Length: 99
Length: 481
Image 1 (cartoon, chains in turn red, orange):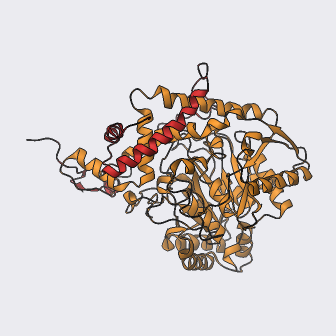
Image 2: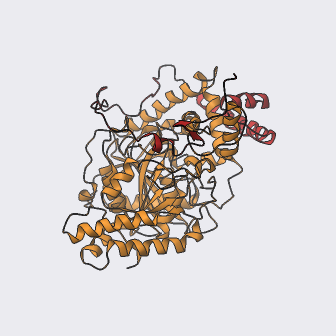
Image 3: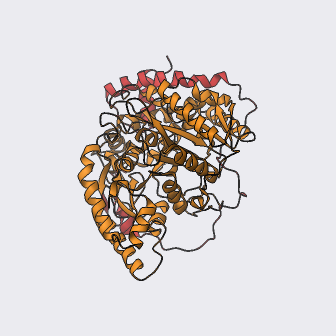
């Protein structure tokens, strides 16, 4: 057993996911099976292997630094057009500070 | 004109000869696509206004004797994880059902600049997570070759549209095989270029170190032409490569004699017999073309699936954190901020996205990072090293794309691990970041398409296209779906 239902609840909390009891039960089963399968990696001795943190190395380190030019931003209205709720030029969210 | 079988070259010839205008072509292509779409559900929505405006611009340029671009008037379908300014981009998710992007992806802008006409946005697995297109919140896509079967995923809609003839070419995204596997299932050409070859700016992020935009076509030449138009450095994507983009289409001369081809033995274990037969026949054809074929070994292959599903889910869990009910249209009601985040995400994501967010969060969480994520990054280095070593001996690697041809809708949906295993031959190319593609190589006795995979060195798309083009012509596989 790699993972229990209470661990699934803990991870869902970290991931900001509200799950139903039946989803928790299903995920415990699926994750258990998938994580057990992932254990196959432990067959490999990787103590001398450098992790692959980047896909390509063909350029100099500074190659991706572009010229520092000013470009117009998309603007407040366009930036907020997809907000779930907006007001007074800002995103609005449920109250977080009690007065 | 028969819009269902046009090639890019035929569109150009027709426009120049005055057989049709770009607006006439766009209208008939839209009409045909809208009429045929209910059979497959390949498109989620069409954008006729944008298409007709773009076509009118092409006609105006042609009338003025100007160059209207290498893709002038070519009907194009765009996977709905690639943003289009002012045109809804849903990622196959309820969460983005009403999202209208304020900008164009670089690939989209370049293709339109080259004259392409975007007809609409294609269906896909939610946030490109899936191998069957059954994870779309807007219903599965049906394979146009066999309507009771999946088109593959996650770019199933793009592959199906090209196979069905409701677009001449399409673009999709490939993170673990999401272009090549649906291409093979639908009998079309699908290409995953070198990582960094095409800008990811405007591709909604799934796993950033693995995500690629890639083209679909009914011929190798069409796919190569599409890549040519969208590849090249873009300062909006810090991982975009500076390597110059060759004119692939100018080099498709059929001369492939002497090409050294490796067959990795690990890719032929567990292969469905008919798919294996088609690949073996394909290898005989490559030999007839003068290629030197030898067996090779890529020993880390068996670790690719677990390695991939650790890295991809870890990156996905971070990338999908932004869908929090604040910035992207959809919000569930709750009195507290954290309750609102949780409810929005709990209600908005489908089962597969939740599974991957959970796996990714788990492997990155305190106490597990070294055992899973760091370990997988090391195994990824071994997989990349396998390829590097192989390419000192051979010029190209030939392999199957998928262990089996298109499976039935519903057949694997309840078994996530079984579904993940269907990506076994495609994820290695993404992990190594090398160019790879699927080219049709025949059909099973049931008439289901089989694809052959070609993989080459970093930035050697030219060698890959030359081999694929020569093979396609020798085997008569162009437009064979």
